[in-house]
Image (cartoon, protein in one colour):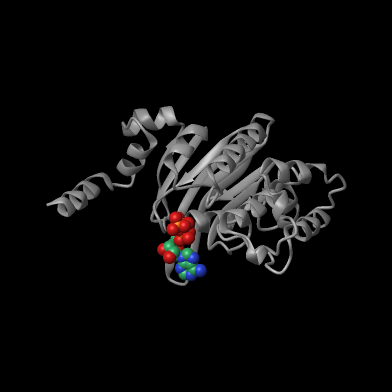
Length: 253
Ligand code: ATP
C-alpha cells in the first residue's frame, strides 16, 4: 500500500447485471495531486466514482481512501471526503439555507463562517431562502458544490463538477480546487472539458469501455501519445480521431 495515496483503485470491476461498466481498472491519486478521470460517454467514470464512495457495490478489486478500505471503513471515509455527484440529490423541498444547516449538523461543523464565505464567493446569497426545487440548474450545482466542500475535506471527489456552472463560478471553483491541493489535499474529478483538465490536472487517466487506455502527467502523455493538446491525446487514445474525420467529411460532402 502506498501511504501517500489519497485514493487507490486496484483491479476494480463494476458490473450491472451482465454489463461490465468498469473492467479491472487501477490507478492511484497521490496527496497533493489533481487527478482527472476522462473518457467518452459510458466509459465508466461515474461507476468508478460511485464504487469509490460506496454508491455501487464492486464485483471485485480494492478501493482505498487514505489507506482505509472502502468496503469496511466507509463511514470514516465519508467524513474525510467531499463529493459532488453527477446528479446531486438535494432535497428539493428545503431551501439552500436549510440544506446547508442539515449538512453542517451531519458533519458536526461548529464554525459556519466557511459556509458564509463560500456563499459570498459563489454569489449565492440571494438564493438562500428559495426552495431548491425552484433553483436553476447552475444554482443547484452551486448548492451541491458548497455542501460538498464546506467542511474542508482532505479529498475532493467530483463527478462532472462544472456542469451548469457559469464562467465566473467555474473559475472560482477551479481556484478552490487548486488551493485545496496546494495546501496538501487531493482531488479526483471527471470531466468532458478537456481545456479545464489540461490546465488544472497534475495527472490524468483516460478510460474507454471501462478500461484504462492512457495515464500520466500532461508531459508524459504528450510524449507517449504524441499530441499537442489533451483533446488530441484523448481522441488518439480512444481511437476516435479517424472516425471523427470520416463523419465530418461525410457531413460536408
Ligand atoms: P458519461 O460520460 O456519459 O456520464 P460515464 O463514463 O460516467 O458516462 P457510466 O455512467 O459509469 O459512464 O456508465 C458505464 C456503463 O455502465 C454504460 O454503458 C452505462 O450504460 C452502464 N450503466 C451505468 N449505470 C447503470 C445502471 N444503473 N444499470 C445498468 N447499466 C448502467
